[in-house]
Image (cartoon, rainbow, N blue to C red; front, side):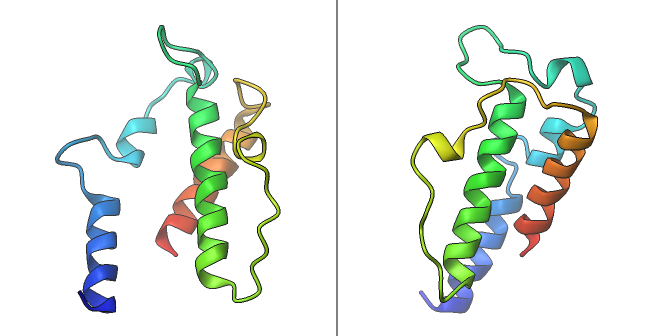
Length: 105
């Protein structure tokens, strides 16, 4: 598989919603009081999942794009937020915006 074909496939996978709901739909209209709630049987809140995805994606992007990348993060501690809820709406909005921006990169 060529590099271009692999990149095209990755782009399709990031937008693929046949077997699951996409990121944008999953968080659309999520009430602020549910961002830190734990669903029965789940270990992490939506906030924790969002932050985990943002942090991991940022690290992967840095690894892929930065020729001077140095892995300094400790698994799993540095990849999961400690608190179940965002500190405020601004933190939520910034995390969502960062995830979307880096997803495009």
